[in-house]
Amino acid sequence: MKDFMMIFIGADYQELGLSPEQLQERMGKWFAWNEKMQKQGIVKAGDALVPHVKRVSGPNRTVTDAPLIEGKELIGGYYIVQAENADAVVKIAEDYPDYDLDGTVEIREVMVFDQQ
Amino acid sequence: MENKVVDHLFRHHYGKMVAILTRFFGLSYIETIEDAVQDTFIKATSQWRTQIPDNPEAWLNRVAKNRTIDILRSIQAEKNRNLAITTGASTLQIDELFLDHEVADSQLRMIFVACHPTLHPNEQIAFALKTISGFSIKEIAAALFTKEETISKRLTRAKKIIIERNIQFQYPNPEAIHNRMERVMKVIYLTFNEGFHSTNQDKLVKEDLCGEAIRLCQLLLKKEQFRSGSLYALFALLCFHMSRLESKISSDNQLVNLKNQDRTKWYFPLIKMGNSAMHKAMDYDDSSVYHYEAAIASEHLNAKTFKDTNWRKISYWYEQLHTFEPNMFTLLNHATVCLQLNDLAKTYQLLNCIEVAELGQRGYLYYGCFAEYYLKKGEKDLAISFLDKALLETSNKLEREFLMKKQEKLL
Image 1 (cartoon, rainbow over the protein chains, first blue to last red):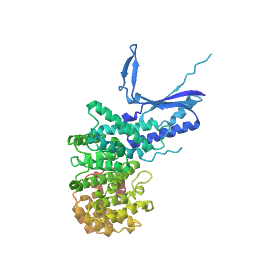
Image 2: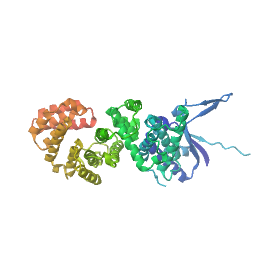
Image 3: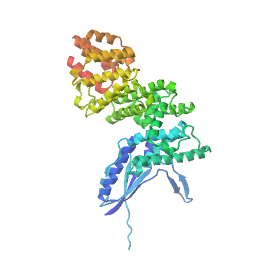
C-alpha cells in the first residue's frame, strides 16, 4: 500500500455565492464521502483550508497577501489516503462533490525516502 | 452514523441569524451581517465534513455569535466608536436574542422591514427572499424569471433605501400595521404563486418557495396583533393549494392539470389545517380576496372527481370575487367555469369584458378559452383560428404542445 494525496483545487464556495441550502447539500456530500472512506479505513489525514493565502517568494522573501489568486486556482483542502496505486485513488476521487462547480482533484503519490 | 442535519436547517437558520444580528447591530449593518452569516455556513461546510456536531443549531449559533463579536471589533476599530452601536436592542444581551421567542420576534420585524412602503414591490419580494428566506441571488433570479443582475440591483437599491431613510428594525406603528400587513400578505402570496404556478422550475425550488410562504404565514399567526380574517384566509388558501402540489407535477416534471390529477395524492392533513384556518377567519369581520380564493380552492378539493365539481358554487364565488376586487384573471377564470357549466351566453359575455393586454404573458389563455367556446358552439373554423391566435401569444413549450395537439384534433 502506498500513500496518496488528493488535492482539491477550485470550487471556492465563498466566491461562488452558494446559498445556505446549496451549502448544506455540499456539506452532506462531503460528510458522506468522508464516512465512506473512514469505513474503508483508508484515510490517513485530511483537512479543509481557510481561503486566505499568504505567499513568500524570491530571494528577498517577499511576502504577498494573495487575494489575486482566482477561486478556481485556490487549494481548498486535501486528503491523504492509502491505496494500491494511483488508479485506485482515481476511483476514490470519483465521489469528490464539487466537479459540477468546476472543482478539480489532483492526485499525487507521497514519496517514500529509502532509509538505507 | 446517519446524517443528523435536518432538511433546510441552513436556509432557515440563515434568516434567523440575520434577523437576530440585525436586531443587535441595527439595519445599517445588514450587508456586513449577511456576509458574516454566510461565513458561518462556509465554515460549517468545512468543519462538518468529518464530524457533524451533536447539536448543529447550537453550533451555528455559537459560531455566529463569535462572528458577531468579530464584527463588533472590526467595526469598532474602523470607526473608532464604542460598543454602543445599536439603538434597537441595547437593553438586550445578545444571548437572550438567541432564545426562540426572540428569534421569531426578530424575524417578524424583518418581514415588516422587507415590506416597508418606500421599497418597490419588486424590491420587497427580492429582499424578503434573500434576507428572510435565505435564497441566493441565483435562486431568486430563477424563481422570479429575472436576470441575476436585475435581482442584485434590486437588493442593492433596497439596502440603500433602508440605510438612507434610516429605517428602524421595528414593528410599524399600530395605525400603520393594517396597511403594512396588506403588503406583507401580498409578498407571501406572490412568493407562493411563484412556486405554485410557474411552469419551468425544478420541483425543489417550487416546494421551497411554497414552504417558505407557509412558514412566514405561520410565524405571523403566532402573534395576536397580526391576526386577522385575511391572514387566516391566506393561510387556508396556501394550505389548500399546497395539498395539491405533489399531484400537480408528474414524475418527469410536467404540469398536470386539475382534471387529470390523481386526487388520492392530495395531502389531507394540509386540507384539514386549511379548513380550520377558514373557520378561524370567520371570527373576524374583515374580508379579502384570499377569502374568496380560499373558498374556490376549497370547493375544488371537496369534489371527489373532476366531474363532481360544484361548478355552480365556484361560479358564484368568482362573481363575488370580481365584485370585491375587479380583476381580468378572475373574469377569465370565471369564463372557464361557465364553459364547464355549458353556459355559453355567460361565457361569451365574460370574455368580452376582458382587456387582453392586461393578461400579459397569459393572454394565450384568453384565446384558448375563446377557442373552447367556439368548439362547444360547433363552430370549428373559428375555434381553429382562435387556437392560432393563442399559439402566437405563447412561447412556452409545454403550452404550445398542448395547444397544437388540440388543433390537430380539429383539422
